[in-house]
Amino acid sequence: MQSCSSEEDLMLNEPNSSDASLSHLVIKFENRIYETDVIAVGDSVKYLNEEYDKVYRSKIVNIPNIAAVVSTNEAGTTFVEYFYSEKKLLDKYNFIPLENKSEQMIGNSTRSGVIDLMLANNTSPILAVAELYDDRNFKDTKLISYASTSWATSVQKLKDLGFNDKTSSIKVFNKMNPNSSYTIEYISIGIPHHKTHSGSAIRPVLTCFEDSYYSGSVIYCIASPTGSPTDHIDTNLKNIGWNDKISAIGWQLVVDFSVFNGENPQIPAHPGC
Image 1 (cartoon, helix red, strand yellow):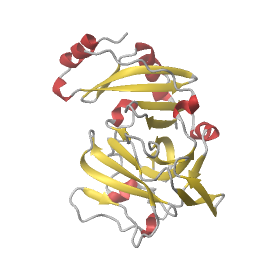
Image 2: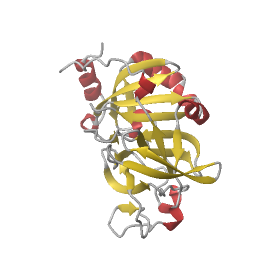
Image 3: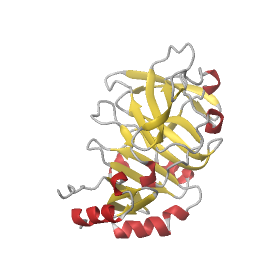
């Protein structure tokens, strides 16, 4: 059992403890499910579940080209499912890649501290919006990317926008109506296709790659369902080992997604302090 007193003691014993943050994670790895509180102080992260802390530091951080699915439930709890490769992730979930039209985007906004990647002359319904921030807790410079029924402002090289290896927190907003249908233009084996989906059956997905040109390790940030009271948020990417690592972003949709593919455990309430 994780105790509040031990959490507070750890915060107080760290330098600059006023900068500490406490959050909660549920993780799936190698068919095991772990639940842990996380304390981040400065550049340090501590998982209070000692079993998971050992697994993370001895295995997860040492997997080359690791892939993860990250989602948020209605209570705001973050769920992370790790895979040994993106191929294994794609073997499990049904993703629809959206067509990238970043070459037509307007480019840098004139607003101070904002890089806005809206397409010029857009007439397609917006499915999703993502905001990537230079600092945790959604502070400092932000980059805004969009996905619609016919295009997405993916970026194969964030360095070209001055935003390489800078992202520390993310928001992904689902803009669809659960009672509406959307005809999606997507790419399969290099060929454009069209398919109609209910807004309640699909979710937008922001894919974030460690290396330019959509390569290396990757996290799939799943937007919340349409009509959900909460949005997908990663307040501090350091909690999952992804602070200042993102070099490319893309967009996809996922069909009939549920947390841990319907294997969501009963999560006990965090004990009150």
